[in-house]
Every structure is written in C-alpha cells, then in structure tokens.
Length: 111
Length: 113
Image 1 (cartoon, chains in turn green, brown):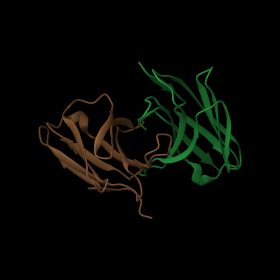
Image 2 (tube, each protein chain N blue to C red):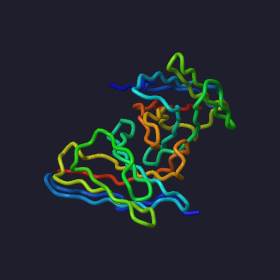
Image 3 (cartoon, rainbow over the protein chains, first blue to last red):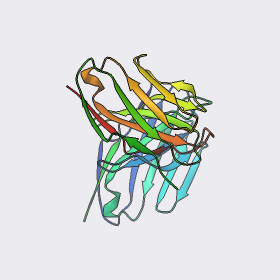
C-alpha cells in the first residue's frame, strides 16, 4: 500500500515559524509537492522537491530527504492568512502528473 | 489568463443516478486531472487526460469515466451513483510537462442521497 503521514493539526503564533513534516511510503517516487487549501477553496501549489535539499520561495521553504522518505514544509513570519490546510503529495507514476496526497495538516495561526 | 473553471458548483443526486461534471482548463494547458476529495481528507487521483487520451488512472471503478475535448476542456462522468460518491470533485490542469504544478478549480460539491 501507499501512505503519507503528516500531523493532523498544528497551532502557531503570528510571526512565528512552523514546520510541517511529511513521511511517505509509496510504490514509486518522482517528487514531493506541497499544496495549500483554504476552507472552501481550491488547493494551490506551494513547492516541489525532486531532489534532496531545501527549496525556498519567499516565506515558504520545503525540504526533501529521499533516503529517509521524509520532507517538510517550513513557514516563516506566519500571518493570519496562512491559516489553512497543507497537503504533501507524492508523484507516484512516471509519465503522468498524478499525485498521491496526504490527509493534510490544518494550521491555525493565532494572534 | 483564465484559470480552471468547473461547473456546476453544487449538485444533489439520488443513488443510482448518473452525473456529468465539467471543467475548462487554464489557457495553454493540455493536461487535465480529476480528483475526489472527501470531507477532511486529501484529494484522491481519479484519472488524467493528455491530448484527449487517458494516460493515468487511480483506484476508481469503471463507472467513473471521462473525456477530454480538442479545446482541452474535460468531463467526468459517474454512473450508478453511490452514497460514498458524495465528495468535492476537483479538476486540475497543467502544461504537458509531468513536473509542472497542478492548477485546481474550486470544485463541484456532489451530494448523493
């Protein structure tokens, strides 16, 4: 079977830093992506790691270690608008852009 | 640039009926994927279409079928609806490259009673 594990809920203070971890066990691995979804909204792309290491995009960074089947999303200088669900997703099939999503981490940012 | 649009936004059907959901992909995107998202869960991959051909399918029964048209818009058809089919159905488009981000629409909320 395939599985992606991430914490179900995280609460953090505005202005702080939060890390959302993701461990995966999948039949194939062709990269780890992160998506953000606000309540009632569409998932929106945040980052993608195909190789080991850190990718930085503004306040968001994402890390991948393929040997540990592990990645994380780091959110810095948290803002109230960052309150949302965050999903890690693994591309499990070569030649097709289909993703296997985790169950999501609900981030609540408090004042 | 027009994003991904889906119709209808909400739909109520009775068990055993059939439903068709529609999706217009983002301009310049030739690949469309469909996902099912149950409440409190992550999206689950149904299938993907590239240049009108299905090129990937998740673990969904054959009563879930689709089409992609020459203008790259797409339809998802579900026959013999079951109560468990109640979910948010998301369409996502992307350029043809496999590592490109998915651009999701706001989805169709399907309720089966």
